[in-house]
Length: 116
Image (cartoon, rainbow, N blue to C red):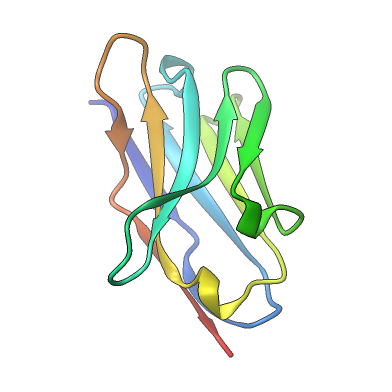
C-alpha cells in the first residue's frame, strides 16, 4: 500500500524549532517530487517547501531562511527542519508525494502549534 505518514508536530514557543518527518512506503523512490504543505484554520492549504526530483528545493517566501526540506532516500523519509518558528506558522502540516502518471498521495497531517 502506498502511503505517507507524518510525525514530529507539537507545541513550541515562538523562536523554537521542530523537525517534521514523513515516512514513505513502500519506497520514497516511487515519488518524483515531494513537498510539505500546511493549512491553518479558515485558510487554504499552501505550499511550504518542495523537493523536485533528485534535489532542487522551492520554499514559500514566508519560510525562506528558516525552514529546510530534505529527502533521505536511504531511509525513505522526507524531513522539514523548522527553525525560528512564529505564531503564524501554526497549522496542520501535510506531506505530499507526486507520482508520474498517477494521482498524488497525501499524508494525514501533523499539527504544529506555535505559542507567542
